[in-house]
Amino acid sequence: QVQLVESGGGLVQPGGSLRLSCAASGSIFFIYTMGWCRQAPGKQRELVAVITSGGITNYSDSVKGRFTISRDNAKNTVYLQMNSLKPEDTAVYYCKADLRVRQWQERLSYWGQGTQVTVSS
Image 1: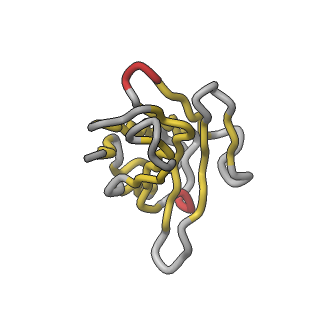
Image 2 (image 1 turned 60 degrees about the vertical axis):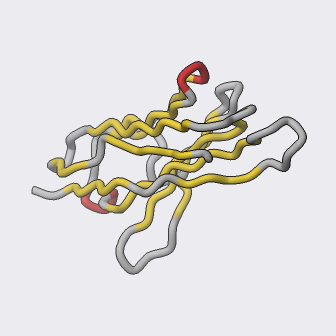
Image 3 (image 1 turned 120 degrees about the vertical axis):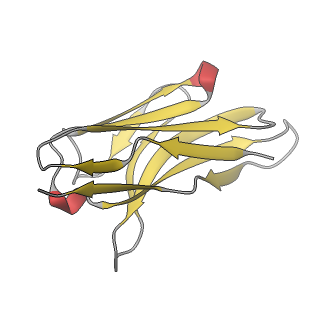
C-alpha cells in the first residue's frame, strides 16, 4: 500500500514563506513525476508545480518565480518552497505522485491527504 504524507502547511502573513514536504512510502518500484496541486474554496483543483525523476520542473504561471519544487529521490520525497506568499495562495495543497508499485504493473497516480495553507494578516 502506497501512502503520501504531506507536512508543513499553516498560517503565514502575506510576503512570508512556507515549505511543504511530501513523503511517499510503501511498496514502490519507481516514481516518475511528483507534484503539487491546490484547491481553494469554491474553485477547481489546479496544478501548481511538477518535477520529473530527472529533475525537470514546470510551474503554473501564478507561482512562477515565487515557488520552487525539488525532490530527494533517495527519500521518495518532494518539497515545495513557497516564498512571497499572497492571500490568493490560500488553499489546501495536495501532493501527487505517478509511480509503479511493481515493474510489470501499470503506472498509477497517488494523492496525499492535503495540507492547509492560509495566507492572511
